[in-house]
Image 1 (tube, one colour):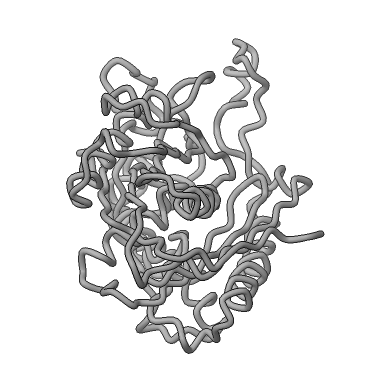
Image 2 (cartoon, helix red, strand yellow; image 1 turned 45 degrees about the vertical axis):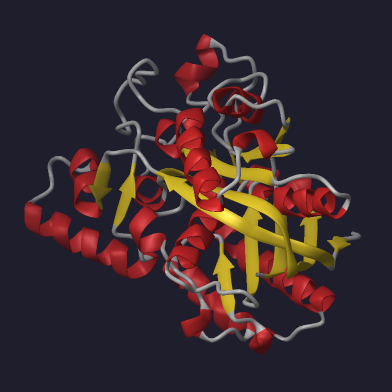
Length: 346
């Protein structure tokens, strides 16, 4: 299997970032009360603490209450979150929406079966930039980053990248772990040019034979029988998925470091996709990045899919963790199954 590797690409940088989350935030206890109504409060609190210790998650925001009927007219969707995050990123970057040359959206939970989230986002922003969706699960944003960097190198104007998810609409009502682990949200970055900055490397691989490990297997367009069967909620083989993920991360992260001609000790900040605290710590130690250089926010948002590393990088920048010259290592594994990593010198 031949990996896709690119870089370095000079003067590529993050000009600004933004996030968006639903107003409804739920603690572990809130989720468990919905799913385990007959349990005692003492037992529920014990389970909630245990899940926080193992997964590192204590809160998440949902547009939809899992187990309730969908209410599209009154619930925010993936596009709604994307619009809010995009506007925040554009304002933070100090660019005009009309200056954007590319809008790339990534999601596993689009608001419509056809067309693109990016096209609808461009319309909402009032621009006619080139708009495209990138689908590679939670790794899709890294594909979008590499694509936008290539466009920057060819002289394009700023690019808007958005990861956005509403997992609450597809979480299996009977799955306590999925409900605790997954959240809704969006993260957006404006990518542009600045002397001294660069995308040092990107590394990607895909094995479609592993796509069955996490998917919603209902055929499209939807049918009443498939809806009744639960064909449009998340399913797969979670144990096999958990076993496969660390090795794929290692391949991608080491590949990106090798392409950048850097060791893990030369990385100033590691921002992986936010799945669980345990996995993030395992990855840091696997490749040799000190824990104090690893950014973790999964406790506040849970796993927000394609938005995961976007949100983490935006929050790391806001916390002052990415001054000019910072070498940032990004990594993600996504359903489908794809894995990727990148090294960005801010």
